[in-house]
Each structure stands twice: as C-alpha cells, then as structure tokens.
Length: 459
Image (tube, rainbow, N blue to C red; front, top):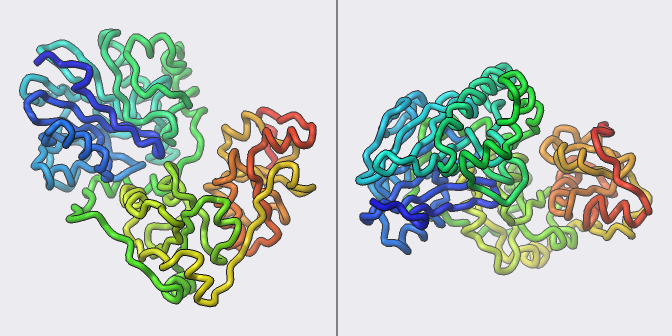
C-alpha cells in the first residue's frame, strides 16, 4: 500500500507515560493499538483523517489503564485483537504466536513475547512481507524493558528470564525495523527518563543497557535490580481488563453537591479530593480533604492513594476542566464520583464552614525543621538533603505514624509534598509545613551539598 511515515499516529499520555497508536490503513479504516479508555485524543485524530477504527489490538492485559478496545468495538464495530492466552471474557479474535491478520494491504503478525505479562504479544506490522515496525507494548521499550513483578514477587525472576528471551527474539528483526512501545518515560512500568518514545531495533542494540548484558543471568539481575514501587491500582486493573471495561454511553458528568452533602460524604467515610493547585490548597481547604492537583499525573496519584470502592467528591477551582477529572478517573477504573462542591471553597465558606491552611514556603523560610522527602527511591538516591527522612508518597498513609513531627515536607516542586501534607493532616499530624521547591533549593539556602546514593533514613 506504500506505507508512509504519517500513516502512524502516536498518541502520548504524558501522565501515565504511555503511547497508544493509530495506524491509517489507507482506505478510511484504522488500526488502534493499546488504546486507553479515555479515547478523546484518538477520536480526534481519527476524525481529522476521516477514519473508522476497524481493528483494536492490545499487546497485553494492561495494569496501568483500562483498555479502550471494548468501547471501540461497540462504537466503531472494531475487531478486537488480543492474545488467546489472556482468556478475555468478551468477544475478540484470540491470537497465538505467528498468527497473522490481513489488514487489507498491510499484515499484522503476532509474536509471543512474555515477560511483562504471561500472555504478552508484540505485533509486527508488515507491508508485502517487509518489516515496517513492531508494537512492543511492555516488552522492548526505549533503552529498557518493562517490569516483571506485577504478577507477584514469586514470579518476578521467572518472568524476567522470559523477558530476556523475548527481547532476544525481537532483536533478530532487521535493524531498520521501527520499535513502537507502549510504555515510555513517566511510566511506572520501568521506562527510564528521556524524551524518546520510539526507536529502532538497530538503535536499541547500540544503546539499551539490558541488551548489553552478557547473558540471561546478568540481564535478570539488571532488570530486577531496577524495579521500584508502583501504584496500588496496578494490582486490580489486569483482571478488570480481562473481564472488559463497561461500555460508556456518554461522557460521565460530575453532579453539583451542596456543602452539606460534601460534609456528610466525608463524615461517612468517603473522600474529598481537592484538585486545585497546591498553593490554593495551602491557602485554605476542607479539613480531611486530600490535595491531588489536576495535572498530567492526577490519575497516578488518585489510583495510588485512594481505594476505588469509596465515593469521591471534588473541590475544584475556577476554569478547571471537569471532563479531565472524570476521564483521568475513569481510565483507571474510578467510577464512584459523587460530584463537585458547588461554588468551590468560596461556597464552602459562605455556608459557614471552617477551613484549614497549610504553610507553603520557600526554602529560605522553611526554618529548622525535620526534613521529610516523599519522592521515589531513585529520585532520593540521586540527591537528597543531609539527614532527610525518606518515605515515598505512595506508602505514606500506611507509615504516617512514623513521620517526624513538625516536618517540612518536600518533593521536587511542591505538588506531591502538598499531597503528603494532606495525608499527614488526615492522619492527625499538625504543624506541617510544605516546601515550595525541592532539595536543590533547600540545600543551597543552607550552604549544604546534596547526599547521593543510598544513605536513606527511614522511620
């Protein structure tokens, strides 16, 4: 068909660090690969080109987002393509190793590449037998390979060894073959930092440190040794994707809630999430609410810190995108969205309710307080304040009793630190200050040098 570069449209979710792909098949039809439940960007790209999604392929049972394949099947009549070994509970075409799908000029060949998951497939796109590129999902990714511990610690090494064999298979493709991974920088599925989200087989042979491992044992040690923590909701979504997400008839809405309704929800065990910027939350918020600013990473922290079984009400600011709140929640399976506070914090105060403030200060005004760093382990090891206590944000709620009293809480910019302060406040801590900045600014204000490496102080 004469495949051109612009026939492949990457659709990047910066917050989750993933890429979906839309392939223009040249006849008004398209193939979607690893589409998430939030289909807004994909739909817009398809509409611009006048495309109907005829095929929706998933490389694996995703743990970090709900698949949009079932919705595409409902809305477009798309044929759903996925591994037969995944035992999905909805209508799809189950594929085994080396099975091929005729896309009408192009061919999609399934390659069994277990490791990230048991049933993982990569999809090799062929044009008259010529290898154009391979959708590698969570197998070979830019300068790494996706994590192998999502099925439990007892399977991590076994799957890492399977990942080694899968990557060896993929590197036997021609060097010019494009590599189109799903997981990229920002993903908790082990992608390293960097701006590149696609690559080639030849480039990965030159730059991927895992491929430089001399043997399977060394590869396994390198991969498993690099695994950090991951959001709690990852443990739920693979099964939700196997069952198939519910089809949505329309964009879900956020009903308006009175201050009384929000107060009752909180008192009855629900959650109030304040999505305003950190500085706005600091200036005044509902006691017991959680600060999770609405930004690209909103879904990650919502899914890491809150259960999906309790109702959630939101406090929003002027001009914040309510649809963005809804879709970030729904794409990770959070559907018990009770609504939003009518009038925001001004409405809360006008109803005679109190508010709580949290000091949010620059480094030179932080005072002589214990320093609590809530960044990820790798960030902490790369450079931290001398004597800092380190508790990752994702584990802070369970370890709040061990957090130092009267601390200055810090991350890199302040958003995660404000979330941490709200968790600590909810757990009964008082006299918490949040650093508007990060360790570089704090150390510079005190004439200190950052400590690098694993000198971690844990409570």
